[in-house]
Image (tube, rainbow, N blue to C red; front, side, top):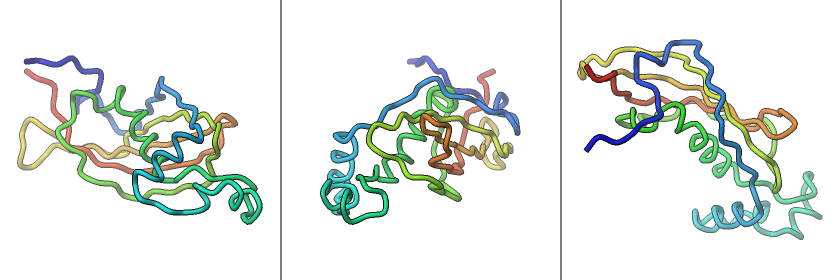
Amino acid sequence: MDRPHTGKWFEELTVGLVIPHALRRTITEADNVAFTTQTMNPAWLHLDFDYATNETEFGQPLVNSMLTLSLLVGLSVHETTLGTTVANLGFGEISFPAPVFHGDTIRAETEVMAARESGSRPNQGIVTFEHRAYQQADTLVCQATRSALMHRRPA
């Protein structure tokens, strides 16, 4: 069965292409607590409001950085890889240059950094993406490089 796709084929992912993503997401305290506890992270900085407010330099709980990373990649899927990817191959450099707090609204963009044909799979290619997340004041809060094995456009 053919499934609809909104992602781009390998041939459409040219180096330098920047894709602003349509979806945005406001992160709630419930999102942060659920993600942090489901991943077995006991960090007080994310879960203990009193501690985070009174004992840290931030004066409030921080959103778990792994939630920020997951959200960044998820926000990028519709316009990059939905229905056109074979596999996520891995992540390169990941950075969190500014904190994310409850109530921040995250937007994302993706830039194609590299693209090459697969040497062993003639109908596929490997693309390296740089995903960037910004909060509502346009402060960069996460940057991640990811490689994916992509389908070529069907003949």
